[in-house]
Length: 301
Image (cartoon, rainbow, N blue to C red; front, side, top):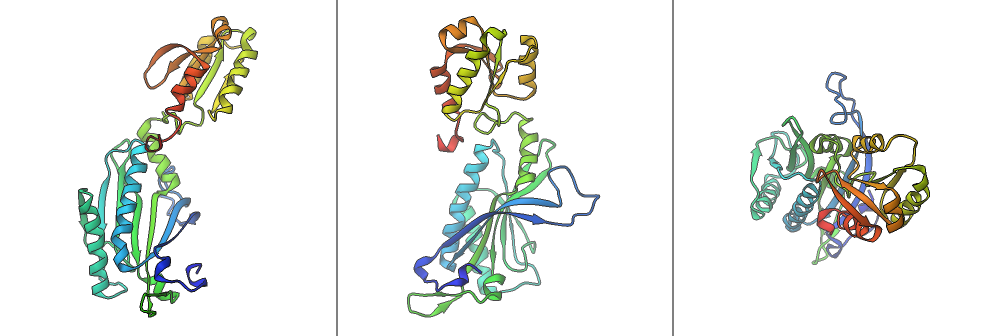
């Protein structure tokens, strides 16, 4: 509808719009399962209007995005399925031929393995599905990109070509994560709750040896928060061992112990969850440099 609100030229294409929308499906109670199959979920939808000649380039660009995102989250095994035309479908065989070829050629050009699901495409166009496995080895469909011949026809969407004639655009629907709930359900199992530092809601837990060092602990936390880090302080009356254990149970990537030496030297005694060892004393500047290197997804560092 937004695309059809004004006159569109071939110079405007590809024309892209994206949103995180909430979707609803009345799943049977027997198949509802945790976060992986729910009745309402958010999805990272995007819709691309383009010419038939632009389809392959858009798919290639999307493949780059999907693999970059999945690698950032630590998924290195992605199964690609290309779903082709069903018996009941919209659009001419010629358009289906071109669309299916564009999908397959884009995947081949990237050198990615894939399988064909004959007749499993939607009635309005073929699609590429991206499947990831959970901790039990079960495959889940997450990302997808698919051509849609139905909506442009149904809403009479057109663009003006170079010769001033009107043409029907191809519409592509794509989602990288798919259901956000399902993606994070699979991710939680994949990492065992140990989110990488860039994604962890709590990146550093500062724990105090005694109440004498509470003021410095909060001062250090405030300084690190100003740099964009997510830091908490445990200045409770619990024993030091209990505080450290609680932070580990919360899967915090770093624990920083504060005592006399740390307060005097303006630093932290740091333990790394992922390296499973004590790193030793780090000044706030040195720790900032270390965490700063992990503060963004790998592809953005």
